[in-house]
Image 1 (cartoon, one colour):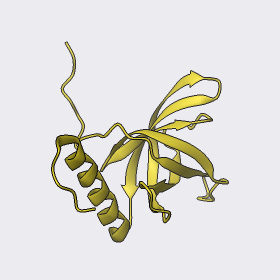
Image 2 (cartoon, rainbow, N blue to C red; image 1 turned 135 degrees about the horizontal axis):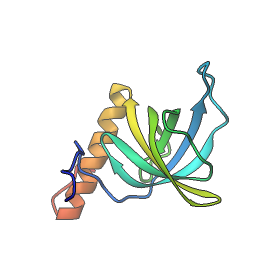
Image 3 (spheres, rainbow, N blue to C red; image 1 turned 180 degrees about the horizontal axis):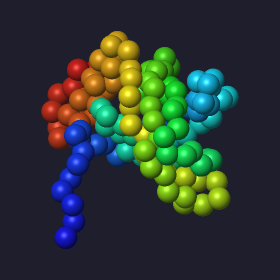
Image 4 (cartoon, rainbow, N blue to C red; image 1 turned 90 degrees about the vertical axis):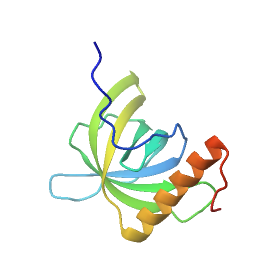
Length: 124
């Protein structure tokens, strides 16, 4: 018997360019690294990262939405990770904080992408 679905938000299978920096115990960020999302929701995302990131790692995220060049900024936490190969890790990240303006842009982007999937008009 499987457990009931625990997700709060609908997810989109979507590739977004994501830069991330891991914060150390003192809160200092590492150099930025690149990842690609494979799953996006209002509450988090699944990233394909080139290196392992321990559960509980605090990370800063810069997300590029579509053709816009100005990234969204968010703070997140690694909640799970699976090794796919020596240089590829599937990494679950929960978004813990996003400024209001970025949150509005992110939610609008997700809404528009879902609307496109079901053939509704979008705001873009």
